[in-house]
Image 1: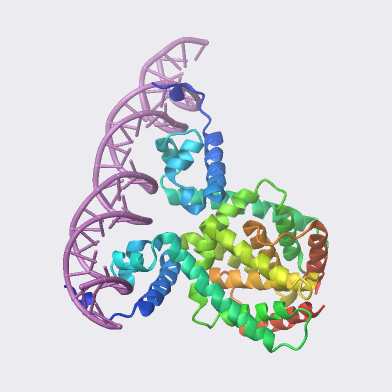
Image 2: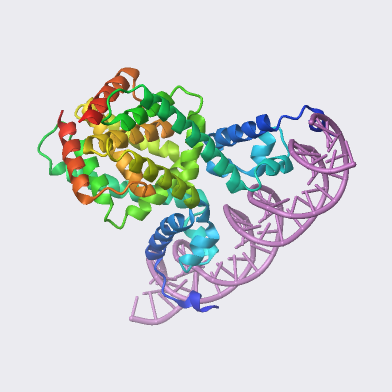
Length: 186
Length: 186
DNA sequence: CATAAGATACCGTCTAGACGGTTTGTCAAG
DNA sequence: CTTGACAAACCGTCTAGACGGTATCTTATG
């Protein structure tokens, strides 16, 4: 009968907190820092509590994946709705997401996802599926070499953001985006 | 008095074998599969033997990093020697490396490196340094928006190769390269 | 509307095994 | 006969997860 037992129950909030903490830990301590102990402790929950929400570690990572791809999908869908030109519409929406990433709060989440993605073969497969699904869905409008190239460049920029390997000033960034949008139209 | 004691000693070969195995394991089992036990066993060496060559795990990863960036540097240098045009010379050499990657044996090594890179904050820092050094060295010839973009696109393609997320046919691949080379000249 | 009967959301403890690293010993080559 | 190149056993720590319990929430019923 500890104090923790007596606090108000707010399962959805705790769940969200756990995902958020998992994301934060991975970029502070690396992927190996994402342990059940560390996550649960940092989220102010017991390990048992964590395992109640996510029955095993993979489920935690899966949860993160779902959460983030869900948000990504919604953002892309919204971005596409505001684009009158059909050709390259998906690519431009994708570009918008990547370029918006740097000052959004979700960046952290994406960082851990990328790391986990590369580390865990199982998640790599899920990502493969995500890409294949979208490539399939927009094969009519977004499969030109220009579109492919634009998306690859966006991925490269995104990777650079994550690794903080290059620092690109805002002006150059804008110039790149303009050029990539042009590519998506060709 | 095991067999291993009686075989001819060839430290350099064993060292190379250990690096190679570490690379292979990571893409078969993920980054978490790269354990001292697994690596040493798969390389046919005892753990003590592994730790003789690399005093700790970080040293093993560092060794991989040195090995691979060393090869990359040499390939880039050679590629640059055969390029008469100054502007974007480094970028084109970089492109050549990435596009050559897919059918080379070193691909595996690069895969583990990328994974380790993202996982280990310490290696992230080393990569940051590598990029900064090269960006600095070729600031006169390779810092145009076109060059930047071309390199980012190459990184994206490289990531896709690693994740096997997109499969790009050889023809499209060639078309992309042509376009990226053109970008490097602008 | 009160309340009993679950269902849900946790907590705290425990354990088997993995993992990085140490130590001590052995063999072979120069 | 010294030294480099390993082997083999061992150790402390960390980690994922199981488990049994307790407190809060919800819902159906009288």
